[in-house]
Amino acid sequence: KQEVTQIPAALSVPEGENLVLNCSFTDSAIYNLQWFRQDPGKGLTSLLLIQSSQREQTSGRLNASLDKSSGRSTLYIAASQPGDSATYLCAVRGDSGGSNYKLTFGKGTLLTVNP
Amino acid sequence: DGGITQSPKYLFRKEGQNVTLSCEQNLNHDAMYWYRQDPGQGLRLIYYSQIVNDFQKGDIAEGYSVSREKKESFPLTVTSAQKNPTAFYLCASSIGQGAAYGYTFGSGTRLTVV
Image (cartoon, rainbow over all chains, first blue to last red):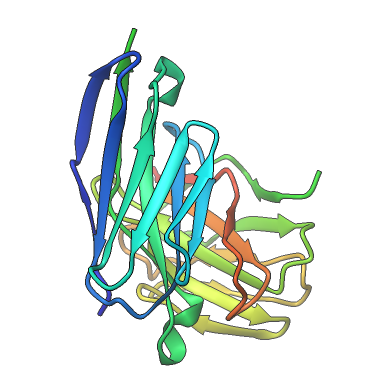
């Protein structure tokens, strides 16, 4: 059974700092990995999608990497801003048998960027 | 703009009552999903549907029911058999099983038992 772990559970940083959020998964048979952002009481907004054959994806100040063999992904946020404050969720899509429909989520990292 | 619309945003249920959460998408996606989110837990899959008139149970289907009569719509009914329904419910869609595309989520419905 796939399990996804996100570390740290919470992170507080001053504005302008570069930071890294970590995601690990137990089953390397994945189709892709997706990072989401969730603001309080809101739905999920997709940030980056990395296919299993890719090593990284970039969008603006965000960069996500994937090491499928070791079961790890990182989300790098450059020059953090107070507007980046949110919960960041990592999710993997399975690629074995009947599991390739399913996204398995981590519990998220709550990020607070202080002005 | 294409997207997923969930309604209502807030819903209150009395004990023993069935309630239905709406999810509509105009993305022309084949697959649709319902997730439940509780504080301190990751999202958990309730039901999913890959095509019209077909749906499958997820990890926590007990006490829930769904239908998929139209490609655009995937309503979720929370029945009286669901003993702890208070949660945040999220609907999602994707182009299809096996496709190299991500998921799109709606804005959620918060259900509270009163």
